[in-house]
Image 1: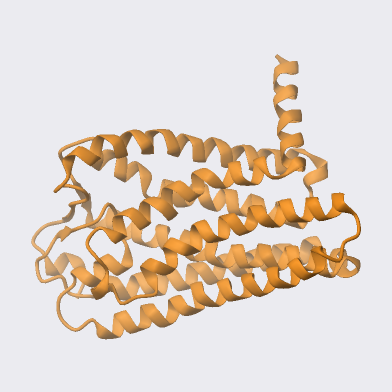
Image 2 (image 1 turned 90 degrees about the vertical axis):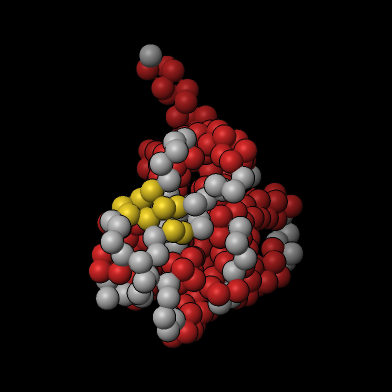
Amino acid sequence: MNWANESSAREFILLGFADRPWLELPLFAILLITYPMAMVGNTAIILVSRLDARLHSPMYFFLTNLSFLDMCYTTSIVPQMLFNLGSTKKTISYVGCAAQLYFFHIMGATECLLLALMSFDRYLAICKPLHYTLIMNPRICILLASTVWLTGITYAVSEATATLQLPLCGLNKLDHLLCEIPVLIKAACGEKAANELTLSVVCIFMLAVPLGLILASYACIGHAVFKIKSSEGRKKAFGTCSSHLIVVFLFYGPGISMYLQPPSSISRDQPKFMALFYGVVTPALNPFIYTLRNKDVKGALGNLVRGIFASK
């Protein structure tokens, strides 16, 4: 059965923090600040990565993908959140909810895999420097990035479609800020054990396995960094890798706490704060983390700003 047949309404009511209305104005203000920050910061990284010839390398190619992904990720939820927090109407249409469900999970799944791919790139650059340019040539980079995007899309479309088939029995209230798979499964009626099991198994491959590969890569990288004789070389390698690790833990931590447990056991407010964290805070912080700890990006940004002012 589809959603439209299960409810006389044609929309969902997103309850959000309706029981704590005093939170809505501060959250609205935070989103109004962080969303433009995320868009400007990630756009700046894309621009400098494309315009500065020194940044035409696999690492910045993948970083450009991450910035574009983060822009899409946060855009899939923040405008709706701002609308709901800033008005008394807390609704989203069925079509809008379905679209948000697909896009939000496509971006989230792709980011899980892309962060693992970026750690593999750093592993090759530091542990296999003589073979790095041969292995990570432009054709291979495009192929790897395309594979990551296609895998993320396949997971999200299949999982979201299965969730959309669950009967809602006339219920149209979601205790959340957005349409997200675990919350929809929890809200559904009827038999949903198979959906919970499928979600848990799939998320092991989308979250736990990539995180394990990332940690293994960085264990090898850490061993290799300590063998670098040049203190400048060690400092540069540490700066680049620590930025990536910070981003990994900011994204994977909330994601694992949300998706690697049965939806029925999720507490009432957990989805709201987790979604705000990995869907809003992380995309806004990523550009600053990579910029502040990376001399190449800071230099390229400085050149871009000086070029803009010089042209004026």
